[in-house]
Image 1: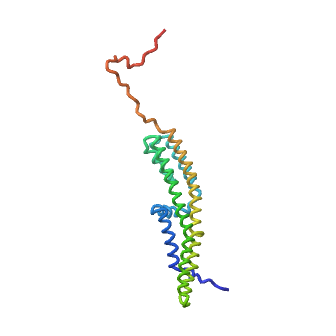
Image 2 (image 1 turned 90 degrees about the vertical axis):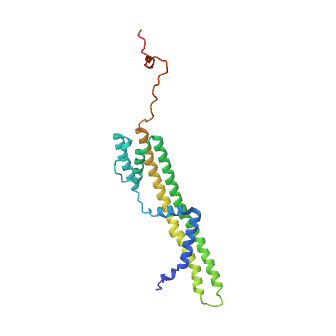
Image 3 (image 1 turned 180 degrees about the horizontal axis):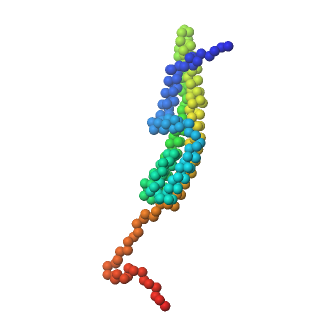
Length: 237
């Protein structure tokens, strides 16, 4: 039985060509911030489905304390969900409902944009990897045809041809592509329960925020007698 010598599939030059090429393409298309968001988000691929349940339980705790003590105490309980805890803290600090609603809207937009950037970065890598593998193949063919007078070095050039294509396919279909699909699925699931929690917190804030609008004082008009500022009693029949 023939055994595969896996060491032959490791070529640092070919791997560097494809890997750095993919990173450069992603950097040009998404910028440094996009690269950082993409790699940081990929660290959360292990997220489970119970995050939504923790968020709902945390929101129930916040609703209970706000209805009993007011919005100023929304950040008092220790919550398992970081997202709900953040909204509770913002609710406690916001001066009125309009300010809190603006904060929630901006936060949701920022999170959705970050999720889209992360998915796009990995999709860009998946799109670029096969092309970079083909580029390495062309470079290897040029090197191989340039050494046709002698058999020396032909094996190295042919290995470069094949390994760059192999690395390009692996980067596209075994690494970047699956990561992009996974992040897209988790992002959609996360966006769904975060929208649910933000809607609940907005409804709670709308109902519980006190009316902090200052009342307009009654200013007497110069020359009016004092009794004109008092409400007139209905005439008795």
